Length: 238
Image (tube, rainbow, N blue to C red; front, top):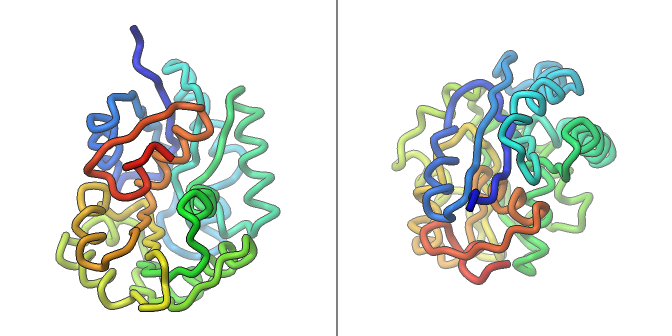
């Protein structure tokens, strides 16, 4: 029997190895199609990266895999359009792909709802102005941000080279005792293999971009999976 398949459109190259790691734990197929643009964390470049033409190209690359759903695996390339623009973006992607679609930005919102968490801290790798746009996006969906830190890192390639120790420090330095969960919103960051470690250190759910993106893809495809090794979000089959 063919394993369930969810496809991901991923910008350039950075932390895409998170997806086969999650696929092995979940026993699903998670093919990744790459689209290319400037990897600068700046508004014009991010809007170009998330443009309809680029996402249509990604959907076409995934079509041979016959995915049950498609997710735009880029947080900044979705929230930069604002709540309404990001919703229009995934509607267009769904129409192009012919299957349910979403993006990492909405994955965070939906994962928080599934966990019942409304007060969060944000540990962003982005420059400050881009991190603020993420905070504005989740706040528009009823989430209170108790604390936000930004790493000021200008490109996705640099984020992809962060070590496990640097990711751990980013998380520890930007948590808040008032937060019910910590959010790490960059899909360019290797995090999937580190989620459980971070949750043990902080004593709360830690939602990282690639992990929530995988979860969102399964959710909109109607694929139920639970596993250990990917954090609280995956442990009870939410």
